[in-house]
Length: 320
Image (tube, rainbow, N blue to C red; front, side):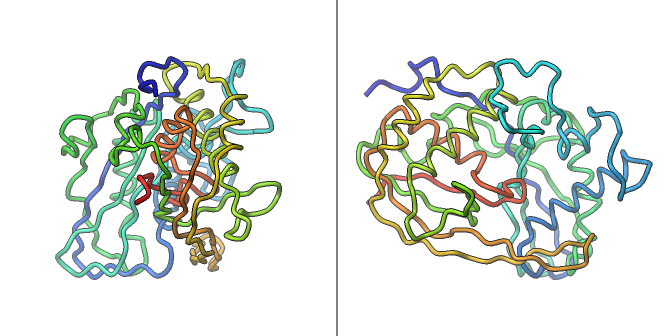
């Protein structure tokens, strides 16, 4: 099996992983799924700062402003070579990759993971400030105080950084993200869903009955290739016909999947909504070696709907 680093057509994602730590001066026990609430905190604070025409009107501010860069990324003037067929907007260059789970007792800390792609890393100071200012607005989360921001470095793991300074991210390659030794594994591999996955295939949500492993793999390939093309260091030159065939050859070895409903609150609408998706784990067999790096990169960017809220996060590991 050729080592993936010797291949020239693998995608590279320019991505920064950050962990924010908040001191809890009062008990934290947010009801329901907190990803939508933290997403709302970030969006509300940024729009309040950058959109003087009001929070309830369409944003016509500078597309390079911190709010638009994250929540309304415009299509580039030149879309040649970008896989944007059927899209009217770019995928968001950010997502929550670690969500606080309550309850957290007074005096303890909670953590929030934030991932930024491409040039969005330069806006880190504004995003951290927005999260710090807005955290106290979360119901039952009064008196949250930001105490530190750390960034994941290739050599040395997490290191605290000065979040007042813009950050630059370099390419994140599959080898960097392979913490479980999957690249050298020849047998079945397990996919653990760390948060519910909402994946639509053929107009319907992919469920536990008749779960299609090839559709999952192809969805990961599409998302990684799109993000790499838009926010990466250069065009993606992979053989997508071969990748599609490799996805179709993947077999489901075993699965313990179930549909899980999570409630999220819409402050704007004053209502609670269900946000369901698949949870559990499944095992893949007959996975071509050229497909594995794509799945590894998929861990970093999640897959399916509502990924910016933290849904669709998964971990790849050898099956025992």
